[in-house]
Length: 264
Image (cartoon, rainbow, N blue to C red; front, top):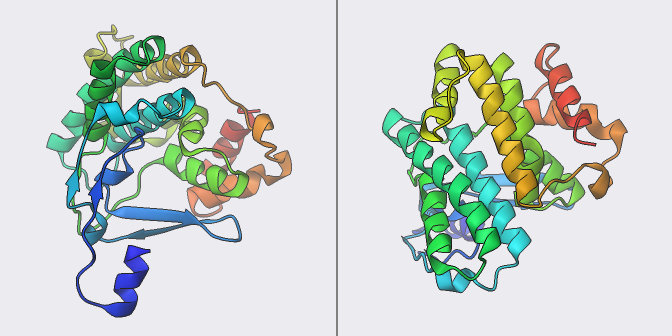
């Protein structure tokens, strides 16, 4: 609303102060989105949409439902992972993703086991912050395939934001072995070092292992879901894949279709 108001009236945008109660990390971005009447997610971006201040108070998150809290934590993990190969992200900010990944793996299970623990919640809020460090980029770059799929599935089939990441992140990471450049693979594979997991000897095998670890985390949090649960018609899958990829790609689209079919 602020974006469209400013576009219509001109002048400076109204300042915002954000007090997040989930781990989705939207407050650290310059973007905003909504689902229109046709079930399509519409995104807008402007440096002025970023809040003027963000207050992290773990106590105000105590009323957040556990499933929402934990699933948006996986959304933050999605940010951290896909920022490792996101265009226009400078190396210092990519390095911030590694401690975010480590703390999300550590503190999400602890927070599930001890939901009243303020320290664990505060650690997760900081991990969320590190996962998508706030930068007012003049050239805004999109995140990766997991986010693209999540946007299409969430808007069209009313799948909660965090749950889309629970569905798409692990299989997307597995597919990244075939899609990423060698440099991007190295950034992603290096996550194992920070998680104190031994390398399997190649970037590709390490990325596959990371995918397995992510799926294990999702499952351990009780967040495993399927497209069947959300009544996503199988006949829609090719169109979802095409929309997520951005075009009908004869090489990539069939791989994305196969990924989506594995989610039933």
